[in-house]
Length: 241
Image (cartoon, rainbow, N blue to C red; front, side, top):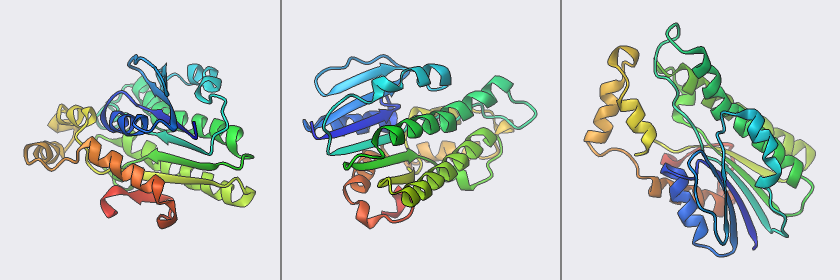
């Protein structure tokens, strides 16, 4: 197989839509990661893993990079968590640690492993971190989500700086997918209004059919990967292309 794709959060939402697109091409070897068990077969290998468990993730890294003479390696850090929606002062300390483990620490561990494995290779190398417009906003009740996505953006930018300086040849993107009709949106709509002043606004997105479909976002991700020469900046937003 020519291409290796490593995809987190592959069991639902945008990750599931991406998985279906990637597996349709027999030239792709896809290694998927999710908490929900999935059956691997053919050009799909699955690891059942909770990315909040940093120690377990670190112990499984070798399984994420199957041997092969690949022409292209792509990592898509798609898994993310909205976390507990509540103001600072009423948050569960364990939840504070968990959201940063899932949204920042896990992608950092995976990026570190990706660079270690592929930096010296001549193949085409790309990392796409699924970010959020919330990284640039102050949203009450979302301190963990906003701050963790902001950290992911900066992590991605530093990684690109290092790749350029050291000649790794790795392209990095932090991609905002817009407001997508996924289980995360359902979690947001189930919040309490006293904990999240924008609750009615997010409910209206669903009621007015203003949410983007996971399939549409998956197509945008693939367009980015297939036309990298058109996308110079690290920070990208699917609503702008």
